[in-house]
Image (tube, rainbow, N blue to C red; front, side, top):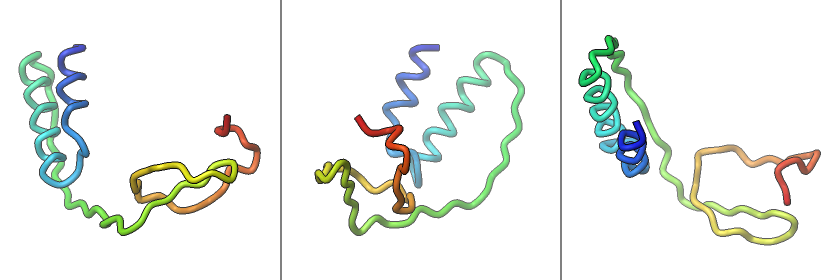
Length: 80
């Protein structure tokens, strides 16, 4: 199981062609253990990130775009 997880983690970022590759790895793993599954294909779209910035506690933090909406953490729960 750990080998499977390592393989899947190396397929990144998992969208576009890499999404298909990840699906094939998962299908292969399930099939090799004779676990029944049903494929449900659907179309996906990933926005192109033009600019990403993260500010935490007044500091700029290097980051990548994650298609999330700007917002705040009012209780500071996730800040160190």
